[in-house]
Length: 255
Length: 300
Image (cartoon, rainbow over all chains, first blue to last red; front, side, top):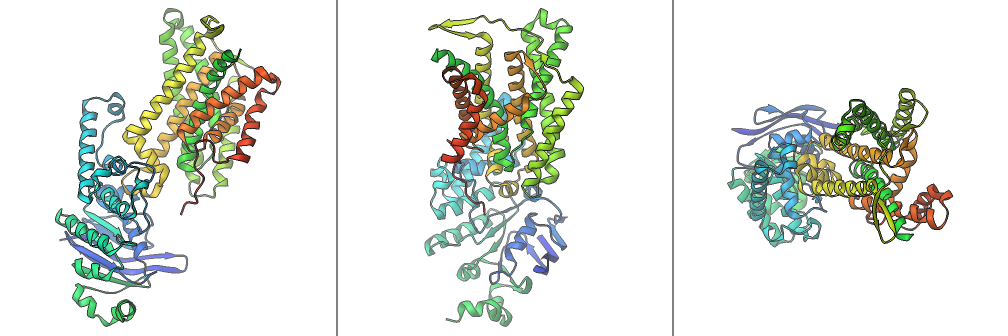
């Protein structure tokens, strides 16, 4: 059972081919990593999957529906969430509000009931608050619920991004370098968190440069280089793939 | 004397603040100065006169003034909000990815269009507000505050309070704040940014509509070009408080109203309109980000 099927995906910016004819499938409830040197097209791929950029060619099938022409709020509604390489929290809002915003898009209630503050509204607001709190507990930020997001330390901000993504209640969660700039202790915390998210039944697609994390956590790895897929397979196969070693791992692991 | 001017200034300032909120909210989300926003206020004044004249003709004003006024305000808000909605859809949405100068010029175009549209349909002469409020009021400390002034101050304060609660507490309010901070990220957590932008225009137009009716009632006369000067003053108020900041627009409006009436009383009423622009120049020179605004950061 595949949750995501990408076929012949191509994205060109003018003459530059950011992603060229890439295809892969992601099994439900797995952890898949996309690796490749800088400029390999990993983030462009994420942008195509979430509807931020429209692919030049190719298909994206998510839970058996075509999504390559949908705007971001629709892909979010269908169940794709993401975090960014550079932190993009709603920095002036509180930690709690950051997570509640994602929940709000899920739970619908009318404008009138919000204005009238009737029972339905109160109940739903209460549910949203409780759920948001659960997602904060998941990433260990429940103590900071009332703080302004901007005031959190760097590592916590990254975890808040993950909580916010989780609060949209996605099937597939895209993490763009979740451990960028973290120390080894924080990195292993994130690794544990990713495993926990998988245990909750989610599928995780990961862009990551930390090879120890990638090899330790992934069920499947897709390797991109200059916008082209050069290999895919299980971590052990990727480690020994001569093409991959030449294009990427060779430089990283030779010393 | 000073206290009297403070009350006059608060009345004026409340109105400026209501209009300034429309500028600042739209700027916060689209980084667009909606120069046609003053015309929505002008439309509010005209629509208020039209609806109240209708209710007066129907006899409702004579039998029950509060109901007539309430219905007038309600209908005016609905119509002005529809104008605001249509304005965004026709003049700004198609230009959303255009260079920033294009929607600005489009805004000026909308402004000229609406002024001439009202001049052609309603005539170039002044229109009279169909109900004359009495000049009676409260007397205290040698000061006279008319009931209408009290109503204007109270309504402005109430609307600002409601807006504040709306922005802070409701789902749409939170979505608006999120959209103002990062449109792409907001859409990725499932917020339909187009709806939020429409809501911003609708709310801003509704506030301007109320301001328009209150000014029409206060001065008793309106004409098709009142939106221009009021719009520029409210814009000044928004810049003074820090454009993009909602509390800033409220504060800026009130400060501007106070400066105008105190300046008119103690310096010269001849220069009444000039004070706003003197303030604008000073603010732009000393603190371009405004009283409550943050120093602009380059967005990545």
